[in-house]
Amino acid sequence: MRNLTRRLFLLGSAALLLPAVAVAQDADNSPLIIREDIPGVDPRYASYATQGPYVFSASPTTVKGRGFDYMVFFPRNHKSPRLIVFSHGAVAEPLAYRDLLWHWASHGFVVVAPLHRDSIIENGPSLRKTSVDSVSDWAISALLEDPVAWQERAEACVSVLDDLRLIKEAVGQEINVERPIIVGHGYGAYVAQMLLGASVKDGESKRRTFADPRFFAGIMMSPQGPGVMGLDESSWANISAPSLYLLAENEIDFTGQPYQEKAKSYRLAKPGYKHVGLLKNGSANTFSGQGARSNATEKKLFEVLKAISTAFLLAYGDYEKQAFQDMTTDFFERMSLGAIDEGRR
Image (tube, rainbow, N blue to C red; front, top):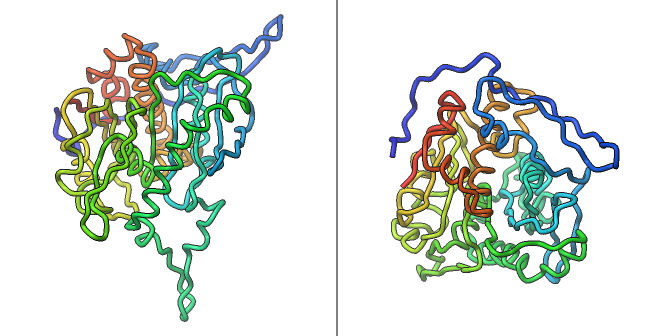
């Protein structure tokens, strides 16, 4: 594995800018995706980074489960898309990540995103406190260290597997749950790690686990390392599932951990089918894609994020041989001209 240290690299002038994507109808009214290749890269990289072969609706479908609400992003005209459960960041909401979630849907996955209680749409505003001198403060630290909140978030993601009948009826198609994948950003990455087997200590120093063996693999975007939220050096001892850990070099989140500390979640997990990527000059906005709409650097980073995450999903969700081979080399590092630093163990 390469050390996750900053390296000098050259940026191509326009080689990795995303092309425009058009959706048309052919003669028999079947959806037709029209997209250009990304100049200067392998066609496989372009296929991972650009919209896939499936079209999707303009808005996600909202499903009221038995205990939680879900936003469902799904491909049309797919007989049996595979399942992704997505957990959003603290005080965020699924629509903030819509560009990424729709991208995965276009590649044949149905993404079910629980609306967590701390969502800005739900109870998020209640976390904002105003002091007597009119200075606003977000009580996020109390949320992140609350075992009750940990359990509720984990239950929201697990409930997707238990509410599949309702979700299938809402989207009008079958869902392949043979190898479901859990994905999360920030607080959502914490939940994903727990569901894959990470153990934590609660306020009484009791070690707890929220693992659900039904989740086959996971993608953790900006995960936490030891020293926060009940995590310690032994927390990852039981994580054997295929995992992709994605870090942004310049992200500063509520934990205050730099990427070097966050990367320990990758290093401390059991070896075997573990992948890591450091997005050079990346920020908190890199993972949602919101920065990509107006910033050329963020646009490039979002492109490589879509590419490597899609390849991981195809490799471990669909058992696609070529995607697995690409995940075992420095393919994405080369295609992005060093915008991501890859590792695996």
